[in-house]
Image 1 (cartoon, rainbow, N blue to C red):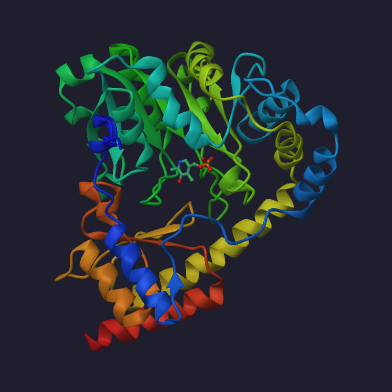
Image 2 (tube, rainbow, N blue to C red; image 1 turned 90 degrees about the vertical axis):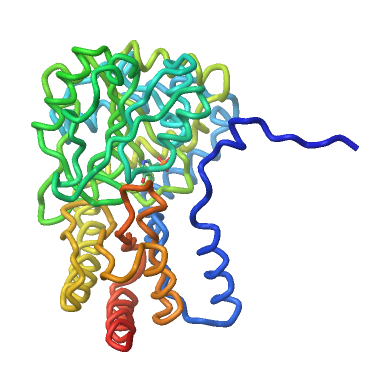
Length: 391
Ligand SMILES: *Cc1c(COP(=O)(O)O)cnc(C)c1O
């Protein structure tokens, strides 16, 4: 019998803060509680039919049954470049400035391996997507937290980062529209990031997974729209959230060709690319009519308005989301974020995510995902209301 010993990098993973909540959730479900689960960042709406139909056809073709190319089919990369042109008026060379990914998480998780040596620093926004610090840890790097504060519109304040940190920094992650705060960024932020990157030789990795989930017709911009962006970084895109394709595992990175080549080096040694049938279906996805996407956005907008309206009435401080399918709210006084999530689960049968799970600066907030029907969301708001009134 051997002793199975985990490696330090696994032992050093941050504690999984959702474990106790997972347990409470399972407990409630086993008791037959009619739980409204708003903790999951995974669309409940199915993939549009034209994409599923394209997949059915593609899967029949034996050409697609073999190993795909590492960097993605040229036709898929051309479709991604065409989408960029149409959506952002940004020109990309599909051969060198687009790289296919097995979901954007795969690219985000792997990129530190390409550019970090032990002890190098990665600038990581917090609260944020947990993959940024974990990928940094796996690559032997150190995360430097850029707190996203409400008073700054949940944007990082670059001026507070010490120069010695900037000198050791190799990468910076940014993510707008933002998960979990639902904040959007403006051109100024990207300009400042580009300037900083040029001065200290830092690669910018902008995670744009939610660029197409926006409200009131206010389209978020691409980092790559800015002059000089392509000199310093790349942008990660995902088909997951845009086309309700989280289970399909496809995305892409676009921008600086040297950065993409570095990431590609890691990928050629670890994976074998995206199943070509999925790439074929994704070409069709990237050409989806705007009307279909507006329909999806309308659904989220109705949900957002229902939850925002319902919670505002209660006096909960919420920042009305301009994008993403999340709502980020301040928890009432007397609670920390985990207490409040527990309270809502026990007294209202509604499950949110404690802000602290996205990093210490998320303490004091709760995230609700708009991945339930409007009817259920309205009911959740009602239940939250009566639970708070009875407190
Ligand atoms: C969902 C999500 C992703 C990753 O999605 P993939 O399915 O891996 O493409 C990346 N970043 C953020 C912030 C997300 O919420």
